[in-house]
Image 1 (cartoon, helix red, strand yellow):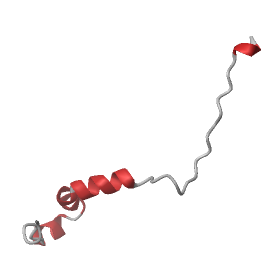
Image 2 (image 1 turned 60 degrees about the vertical axis):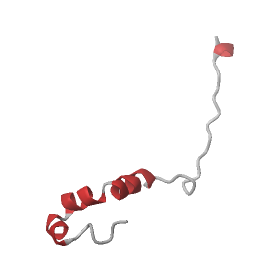
Image 3 (image 1 turned 135 degrees about the horizontal axis):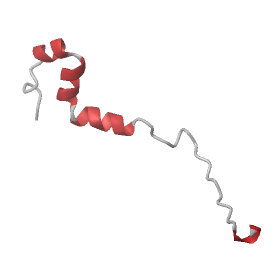
Image 4 (image 1 turned 90 degrees about the horizontal axis):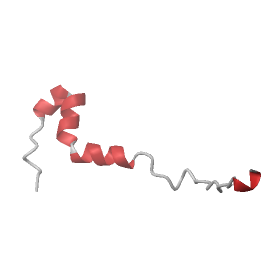
Length: 54
């Protein structure tokens, strides 16, 4: 029975190689207007988003 068990090698990950917050940065960048409206609605009202858009 023991000879049927396979031992998988565990790969050690370096915390400096893993970009833990990349996905959050992408979401905030892609939906910045909506994010700002959610967290700072008063500030959102004062910003002219069309002024600096390309």
